[in-house]
Image 1: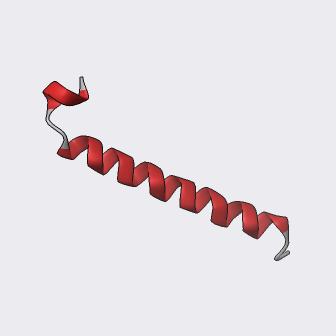
Image 2: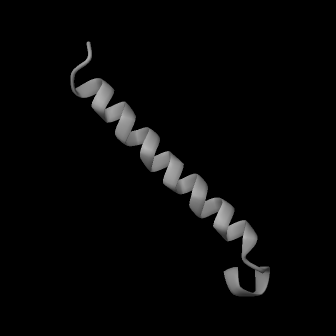
Length: 35
C-alpha cells in the first residue's frame, strides 16, 4: 500500500501547499494590482 498511491498523495500535498502560498501572496498584493 506504500506504492504509487502514497507518492501521488505526497505530490498532491506539495501542489496544494504551493497553491496556498500563491493565495497568501495574492492576499498580500493590493487589490489594484491583483485586478
